[in-house]
Amino acid sequence: MTQELQAPLAGSPPVAPSDRSAPAAQSPAPSGRGAERARRILLRVGGALVTLLIAVTIAFALGRMSGDPTSTILGPMASPEQREALRAELGLDQPLIVQYLEYLRGIVTGDLGTSLQFYQSNTQMIADRLPYTLQLVGAGMLLAVLVGVPLGVLAATREGTWWDRGASALALLGQSVPVFWLGMMLVLLFAVKLDLLPAGQSGSPQHLVLPALTMALYPMAHIARLTRATMSEVLREPFIDAARARGLATRQVVWRHGFGNAALPVLTIVVLQTGTLLSGAVAVEYVYSWPGLGQLALQAIQFRDFPLVQAIVVFGAITFVLLNQLVDVLHALIDPRLR
Amino acid sequence: MAAEPTFETAPAARPDGDLLAVRDLTATAALADRSLTLLDGVSIAIAPGEVLGVVGESGSGKTTLARAVVGLLERNVSIAGGAIELAGETIVAPGVGATDQARGRRVGMVFQGASRSLNPLIRVRRQLAEVLRRHEPGISRDDVTRRSEDVLREMRIEDPDRVLDSYPHQLSGGLRQRVAIALAVVTRPSLVIADECTTALDVTTQAEVVRLFRTLIDDLGLGLLFVTHDLMLASDLCDRIVVMSQGRVVESGPTAEVLDRPQDPYTRRLLAAVPTWTEGVENPHA
Image (cartoon, rainbow over all chains, first blue to last red):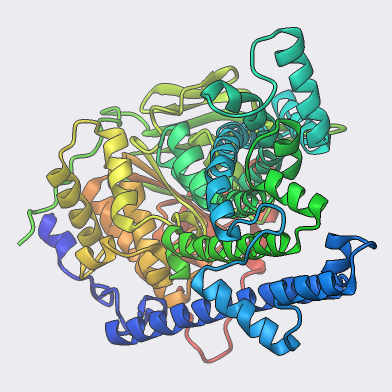
């Protein structure tokens, strides 16, 4: 019996993965595949650099188009000599192309200029504030993912039920509530009324709770809605029915086969939201006096500290471009068809 | 050389009874404004080693019947009457849903469009392994590898190791179909349901799949519920045929009898709709 099965059937020869009748099985030769991969990586890095150049150029142009910074910094009573001195100090007396090249050189060498308000290196100030923002964004996004993904999966697996409607309503609410209002309400309830948590500042895990909660709400709602939509689509795919028909546990079908295939768009949103929040969690940091980059950006704008604003914008652009690259890499890691 | 494949099947068939018996099965779908009868008192039976073809046009209830056996009906579809017995054990009846234990272990299923019935992000090796581990919890890693390679050899795959390490998109349509069948039979079920599983394939691959099923049935003694709208294909493979229309069985019997001497007008119309052959060209199915 075994031999019968092992022996090729008449007119039905064994099929090899690279059979001529199997064009889809053909893969490029290893060397060709390596060259193709190298070409794609080069294209990707080149594209990122061009995007970055455009972003920093726009930041430079906007800084120069917003009027003479010496007037806004020194005020109307300053003498022409004072203005000229400041222009020289800021390098604004140089031709525009020289300023631009100097600006690019600074970015490449990590020198983002000096703050007019704090008389410190902008790079150093961003580096000092970044850990606080990372803490806040990290905790907020973690919370958003831990709540948003299960909420979206729950809604998708119980489509059309009250679970689905409840989860969707919660997500809609999360996206509709203004962050500053939520922050103030949480402060009023947990800090002022119940006296359970500190109202602001930083320094302990307790200080992180309310800002992280506030920070998490919008991305959580976004992640929940996206997860629900993507999962609903994936759960209709034939391979989900096939996995069920093979008797796999619901948990395996939903998470490994379902969410595994729905994860890409969710992951993209998580990474890009992280980028957005890293470069400016202004409202949350302001409400909770959190000493992060958002607070710094606000101070810079209020004082018209244009080198610092420009430095924060450049930092945001670099962060965003790098995270976009990370998204591409993660896509290729998760989906073999994209490699 | 790899160990010889083993062919023990799950203990399912009664010594003298049907492997699968569907009795008076009625299924209804709850729509927004009314209830729609999808299956209306359907009765079929399959003995071990038998191939039962279920034919009929789209919407006749073939797929609903197949999915009812494995408990994969849509959420709005419910069993209103009748029962499904697997080896004498009732697995589906109104208020009874005991297909979980049968699904994958005692009943395997192959779907239409194998390409889309394989998870595109998971290698074939892992897809086979998770099925084996699910149904045989204590199985060793070596046994998983051996059984995976064996089942692919049974599918006439020449280089199982390479296929095991491939993602579905790296395989041809024919290979993907064989992998899908391998996933359905790797646990040695006593019944396999093939739901239009040859529809998207070219005729050569269709013929190969039919031969593969024939060999598996002859060697493993499994029963096959072969759902198709292709009467010629059904005539090649099936021992008996059931013709369905509007959720009812309108005719059933041995394949030759049903196809050569159809009694029901619907069956006659179905046969009349099969493309005829140009004069002078021999019909290979004749």
